[in-house]
Image 1: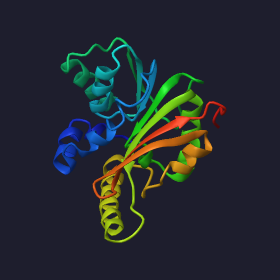
Image 2: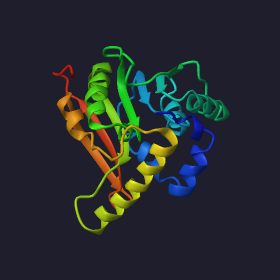
Image 3: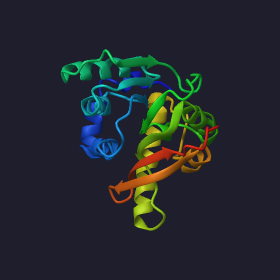
Image 4: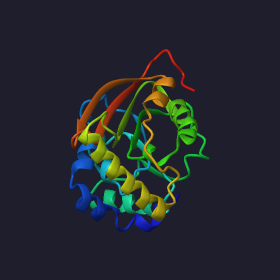
Length: 218
């Protein structure tokens, strides 16, 4: 999987297809959680959330992990153009499937429009890794697509997601060919859903999960 080819075009593609809807999902709980000391962002993309994260918590240490070196370059440039310092931001070029997560290293895990890229067997590997990196009581912010339970909204979502997966599989060699809800994986690794915000007639969701202090994940 590589998003290198899309890196120069991703921002305008998102604007044309969704306006600011995805960004509103990313930032839905940004001002409602405890200020973190260490933030781990997976699949940051072109850096729109990173910019808001840096503005919200200028003293936090932030690690951005992405398998696309071009996406990381675009994200770094966006941060600098916003006039924000990047000396406390680490841009890590790595594949989450082969990356070894540091233990209890982050107060905040962020996976916006990231976990939907993977098959269930890969989520079985990825989610425990992220839980391993989270400190007790850490927050996990997740924005993603979802499929409504029934009716015309479900049909609409299924058609849209089918087209999206066909496109991204062709262009990026995306591992997944359908959406897998990550909820059960996250719960099994010691997190509890605190808040959820749904939008776009149930197609989009923003979650705030919190790690239970008595668990170690895995």
